[in-house]
Amino acid sequence: MRLTVLVDNATLTDRYFLAEPGLSIYLEDGGTRVLFDAGYSGILVKNARKMGIDLLRVEEIVISHGHLDHTWGLDALVRLHTEAILEGRERIEPTFIAHPDAFLTRSCDGVGEIGCHLSVEELFRHGKVLLTAAPLWLTENLVFLGEIERRFEFERAPSCGYIYTPDGIRDDTVADDTALACKTAEGLVVITGCSHSGICSIVEQAREICDEDRVADVIGGFHLLDAPPEQVQGILDYFAEVQPAVLHPCHCTDLAAKVALSKIADVREAGVGLHLEYG
Image 1 (cartoon, rainbow, N blue to C red):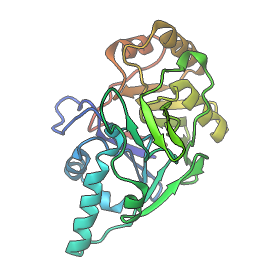
Image 2 (image 1 turned 90 degrees about the vertical axis):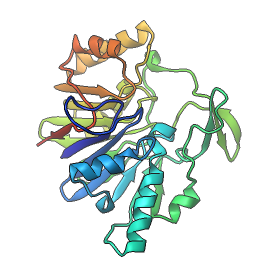
Image 3 (image 1 turned 135 degrees about the vertical axis):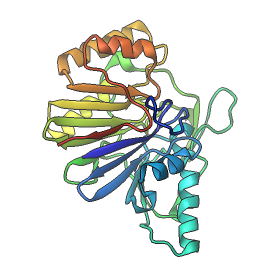
């Protein structure tokens, strides 16, 4: 399995790509190409083009959760495919994969929409849409983890505003937050979006679904921004026990959290332009 970071809050040093508060990761497993999240503004298209990655050949577009910093870049992907059709260029019709809540309207702190502004109906015009709360195997080794069971009290966070469902408005606990996991020769590689559901809960679900205790790497957002000490300590205790070979925290993970994690694990730099390969 190979992965490349297309969007993150920062770029690697001396790599001349664009960055923004958002996340998008391109993956290849065997002959299958997967895009995990789409960032905020559409810079993933420019960064991918500069890296020689053809987003028109991506079969599956997986959304970690419905927040704007992970979904608003879908606009750019829709335009990319629309132009390809009009210009007669080859493309693969993508399948959009997400939790059923991922495309619902959300609001927070007076902002009218912090969720995806493309509806499921609109996405259906541009490809297939598969909504599931259950785990879904994308390849023999790569799995969409589905709705995460929240297992650790120290990771429970307050709601993120409101979500507008067919049954009415309710507090948004970001139940749609999920991740990917890939079985490799070195152990599991877990790819996260923001980890609103809890980074430890995500890793535990990945280990359970994949029937693999070894963790080779966790890359993505850990949702640790000014996190309370008891949450940080709980996460440190968990990873000290799991003993991941490497961690690549990025996106919504602040410096203090990275420093704390570095005391119990091999924390490495992540950013736009990072390319990783696993056996």
